[in-house]
Image 1 (cartoon, rainbow, N blue to C red):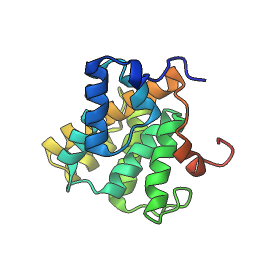
Image 2 (image 1 turned 120 degrees about the vertical axis):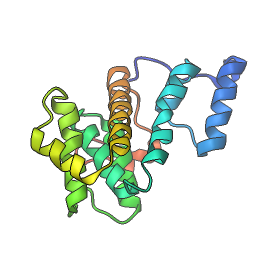
Image 3 (image 1 turned 135 degrees about the vertical axis):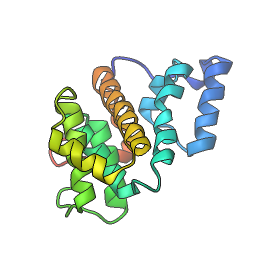
Image 4 (image 1 turned 30 degrees about the vertical axis):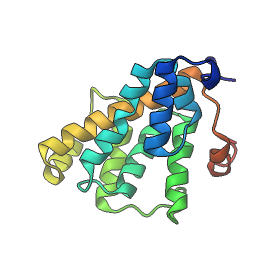
Length: 177
């Protein structure tokens, strides 16, 4: 059970309702995490910068690559909601997240995602060399900032124990639903 409640839209302040309505307008849905974050519209806005950075990374990093990168971060952070969110993204596009054949760039991003979480003070030099060879500096800055928000999302969900959204249940890893 979640340590923090989701907002009660009917009882929420105008500021919270406006942020809620804008989220629905922009993305068409409201997750349990967002309903919890909306107790602080500022926190919600900061976490929503994930979408801004995702847009900045396009087309240098494809959707599948970003899903694999985000999934790797989520798995390393042991965030059930985030893991399941990216499993759904992959499955809905016809990929099996438990049997992915990774391209060179996908394998690089998966390794980087794990490294960011495992020990951000010790990302291997060989990994850095491969990243610098493949991506421009701006893309690397955006990718690292994106990873930070992705990790923050995982941490928020883990600490609060946000409940898994019902629409994600079918995509949970075996044994975790």
